Length: 146
Image (cartoon, rainbow, N blue to C red; front, side):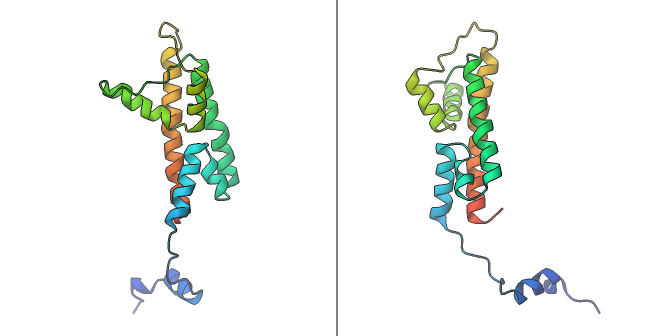
């Protein structure tokens, strides 16, 4: 009769190539990739040698952040008494160094009466959340899940 599923072709090839055991993930390397990805969007992927993805992230995410500032969005303050504002501030912080530079430069004051204010806020928040996902992707790449 036929072979059992545990004797799959993939398993036989892996055994022949000596790859029967998966490599042990390096936690320090993964944490460094995630931190570099937060520090500068795309930095973790660039550090891991994924140049094309890293460059796309390094251009797209800061560009979204700058568009949010240009649309007169507000960088949310950390105010624990207002939970949604606090979550928006946490999302803004996900932008890393661009957020810190904008905060230090006094940008992101926003103008509530501006017709583009809500769109600006959306760009700022989404760019931070997207960068957090990119950091998790860099972590997964470093661990070997991708």
